[in-house]
Image (cartoon, rainbow, N blue to C red; front, side):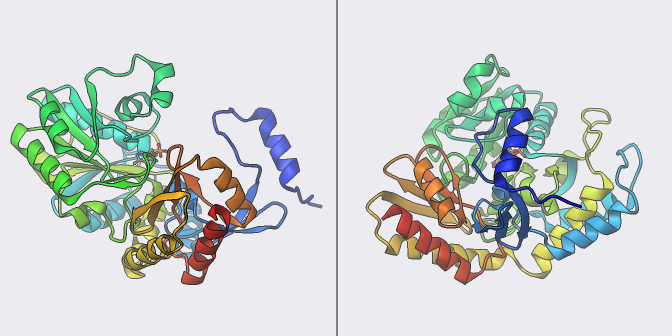
Length: 391
Ligand SMILES: *Cc1c(COP(=O)(O)O)cnc(C)c1O
């Protein structure tokens, strides 16, 4: 006999032994399908958390589920000291989907790891130490990625971090121009700052950053961990900005929700030196099979394309509400932020009570990150709930 546990039972059991690092919401999510989630008491939610960006393909995506089932019964682990059929096929398919010129990738297990790999590669390729990152930039929580992350409350308990990192105001070309020198190995940017408040960079800024990097021999690392795999209404934000990064960091929705990351790099660098980096789990057959299915779904069903009009629709409807508490509605594709004139936390709780799960992006921005498969009627319900809660 199985005993059905409710929210309260699960919350009590988990709280006893959890690490404590996550401020948690009083819900136990136990099942998902498309853009819907269910808690342990059977309540349904429209999901605008989207696995914090890992669920672009929708929950329980049948193609991803089938690929995982099939590969799990064939081979789960196979370190990269061997070749593997799923990895060989995936690298090929990934490179075909990447901006032209990026033709190799180091496979890892998360966004922070992708940033770590990108930083090591940039130092290795240039023989320089410096990294210029941005104010409000977010790149992960491991020591290297944290050195590039700006948020003082994430950094300060762990000082000193890694030498050579500077932070310049985002979307201000003059500040970047002044910071990039002959010692700069890399400039690391998001094209839309996600965690930092849903702030798209301007086209001139991004083009200017790319040019400064080219002129000074610094490598341009673009962090597409959140913006990649269709989130912004194209496969890559780099495409929309018309740039080719030297190095691109990928993760979140790369493998349909399984933990995976990648550091893609330009063909002119050739392969990385043997033994310069590594990971036990990186490029395992199970995640590669899931990533193949995820990439096929994204391209064959064209999930990125419709994310652009869906996002524009939501932004338009939200602006139309003319909510007095809202300073600005902005975004790109289905990465959407409402900057409030007050703290966002109470409104996230109120939305949850209305059956909509959403994220913050900093203290006063409400962030929507729904699976790309979300339907227009679901978006209408999200807009209605936001209107009610913020009225
Ligand atoms: C989430 C995120 C990361 C970190 O990814 P993890 O998988 O949580 O380590 C890095 N960069 C950006 C832009 C992100 O949104």
